[in-house]
Structure formats: C-alpha cells, structure tokens
Length: 405
Image (cartoon, rainbow, N blue to C red; front, side, top):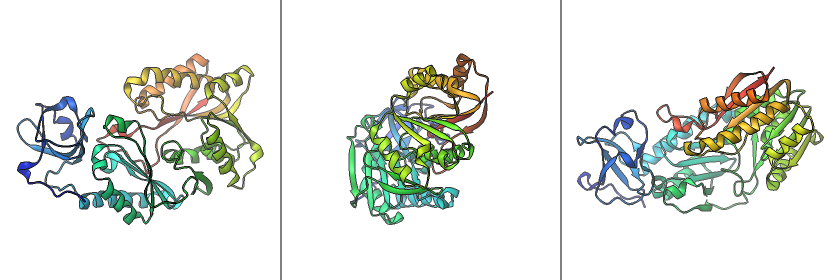
C-alpha cells in the first residue's frame, strides 16, 4: 500500500550547493550527485525527497537514488503536490490522452504509452502490443511505486496482462536487480500479433530486444515504404524485418535483409508470412553485418536503397569515440555499395551520439567513400515517444535520408 506523506518537518531533504538549482529552475528533471551539499533525514531508495536550494527554498519533489550519479529524479516542481496514487493516476491519464490524439492511433494497435521523463514519469517505459502491456521500471522512484503503477495501468488501459522487462543495464546503476516476467495476468505473449499501417507483425515481448519491437521507428518504416518502389534494397541489422516488410509492401524489387540473430530471422519469416506479400523478393542472410557488407563490397554489389538501423553503440557520451568508429565503418561501406541516385536511410539510437556528431560521422564516411551525397530528410522517433523541451536527453533516435549523386 502507498505510504502516507510524512509531515513536512519530517520529510527528508537534499540540500543543493549554491547555484546548483539553476538546471531545476529550467525544469530539467535530474539532480546529479555532485550538486548535493548534504542530505537531511534518512531517505531510502525511491523515497520522495524535497530538493532545497542553498537559501532554503524548496524547488522540487523527487525520487531519491543513493547509488546512482543521478541522485534524484524530479516528480514535480510544485512542492505543494503529494506524491501518491492520485498523482500517478493523473500522470498516466495525461499520457494516455496524448496517445489517443495521435494519427498513429488510427493505424496501429501498438504504441508507447509512457515515455519516462517526457511524460513526467522518470524511469518508467510502457509499450502496448494489442492487449499486452510491456513495462520497464528503470529507476528507484517508479520501482518504489511499482505495485500502485501496475494496478493503474491495468485499470486505465483495460489490459489484464503486463509483462515486465526491467532488465536494462541502467537498473544496475540504480542499485536494482533485473526483473523479467509477468507482473500482472498471464498469457502466451511470446508472439503478440500487432498491426501497423495495414501490415501484420508478431512481437516477442519475452525475448525480443528492448520491449520486443522498435515502435520508435514506426513512421520511418512508413517513409521507407513510400520510397522503396522499384528499388533493390539492403536492410542492415534487419532484426525482425520491420523495414524489409514495409519496403516490400511499398514495391521494392528485391531485398537483402542481414541479421546476426537466428531467432530474429525466424520471427522475421513469421512476420513476412503474416502478410500477403511475395516472399521470393526477400533474402534473409544470417551474418555479422560489418563482415557481410565487406563481402558485398568485394563482390561489386550495388543497391538502390540501403537501411542501417544498428543497435546502440554508445549508451553514454563516454563511449562516443568508439561508437563513432563503428558508425563510420558501416556508413562508409553502405555508401560504397549504394548506386548513383540511391538512398541511404541511416540511424543512430545511441544517446551518447548527438545529431550534430552523427551527421559529421556520416559526412566523414561519404568523404572517405569518395561519394558526393546530400541530406534530403532527417528522421526522429515517432510521436508516441515525445521529447520534453527541458529534457533533451529524451531525443535519442536520430537519422538521415541521404542521396548519393
């Protein structure tokens, strides 16, 4: 049961060093350990703490995380609010209302319902796949209120089954152990059938990457679909075939889909079979993408469209240097394989690689490939992955549509 709020005088408090409240005044929701002067009281992980500036003004209420460099994640900048079930109900209702207004809600039964800090629920991610919810509790605050949040999700969505995928590495930084399995209800969820713009997919919420499907790429798949007609396409890091199947539906002449995971390819084949498409136009290749691109280069292969959607090479800025080399390598190979007049849709989901750096990496790859290229469009995450203006860290997915002259 949620705890009642302690009297104000008994509430634990983080007192900030002078001047370190400036980011909070700009409504950035994180308090880093280096900004904290002292801790008053004895807050436990996930407890609500007051955030107080050096002169003694309470500037926010936040969830305490004693082991993380992000020492507190802000619930609200209104110190008069009470953090409890009514608070979370209001936040979740607001997030669900937003999704109901989106264009995509008319074309799919799979949406991200809660997107962490950008929905005022730091550390909580909730995706809906038809009648199954997949939830990730990635910070001590939402972990502290886990049961109340789960009950609200079931009530507000009508989905009785909630599968928990709280297995991301960030939980370790919060001092939390991984949790995987059904948190509410129980059903066969290894292959959740979903539809997206008239295409059918089977999502493995139990074993798949992230929460089972890359919902953030929904509109980008549609864009590739619109551009694919008549083109021979290479889909690098094809995973369960989202881009390949969208391109085939758009009239691609031939698709080579490269993926290192045999399990992912099996699901991709199931996804293909679930749609009235000519499977003879897709060849699935189980291989390391870097190695396969080099082999194709050595054979003199060329493609009219290439999609590169690799896994996260740089979760943090500290890993950006090594990630930049990997991004440059695959884009260099892709640009050599791209025929004149061909299109490269290239992506990075690494939070440690910003949009400016990513463009610079692709530009360097084009220079080394001796290719004249230009950006036609920029890609981002679908609208059910909103980015709060004051929280630029939420904008992790970036992409470029590049034309090779």
